Image 1 (spheres, rainbow, N blue to C red):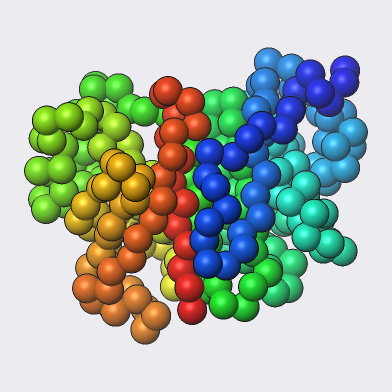
Image 2 (image 1 turned 90 degrees about the horizontal axis):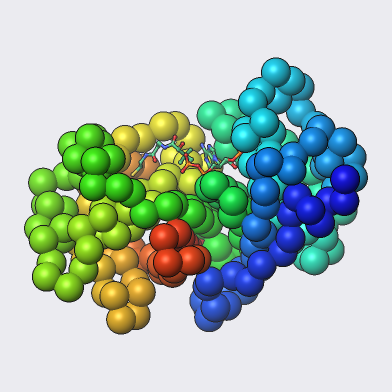
Length: 237
Ligand SMILES: CC(C)(COP(=O)(O)OP(=O)(O)OC[C@H]1O[C@@H](n2cnc3c(N)ncnc32)[C@H](O)[C@@H]1OP(=O)(O)O)[C@@H](O)C(=O)NCCC(=O)NCCS
């Protein structure tokens, strides 16, 4: 099996227009083509915790680590293996911040070596179905976010997916700083600018000295395909 049958690089939906340079690598992968010998073929260490995992999990972990190794190589990093740390948080080489996401058949990794960056998060999500929105919205949304779903020209499923994805992206960016799990009600999305593709959000309650109650941030979003969205959180120091 050729590794190209399993994974190919694809273009990033995000332009590199942040003040600090963030390197990124995106790929498309095919779970049905996954085989264990793709790990050595792609120079990725097969971790023990994946022994006995289902094909989908082994494939998505490989695709995410392949993106991470590819972008770290481009940065000139000596270490290309990103181990899984506490609470699932990837362990990046000294001085590097990064994030990984995968969904269905897409994966990506974003990394940055600039000391001016405190945290980085990315998340790829398929647009939810109306049924899923109904089932999980109480768990994900705070009351103040509900009106955002009722905008006339903005599909509620897309709005909900963006809010959910933003919260996951922020969690990935903030977890290494906060050092513990925090729930979805700790962030409120206050606005989505569909023209600029910018999401504005606020932290509720002091999460950490770095994130006081009421602190406000912005994130970017983009369409990966018609039915896949991605959000990108960038936290300057
Ligand atoms: C961890 C979490 C954010 C991952 O998001 P997801 O949409 O399920 O999956 P994704 O494919 O986008 O991301 C998975 C990757 O996130 C990364 N990740 C996992 N835990 C992480 C953590 N604690 N910190 C940073 N990154 C983490 C990993 O690289 C993981 O991929 P891997 O297991 O193959 O290494 C999600 O599963 C979760 O636990 N969410 C609850 C916490 C939360 O979001 N709170 C809301 C705060 S407002």
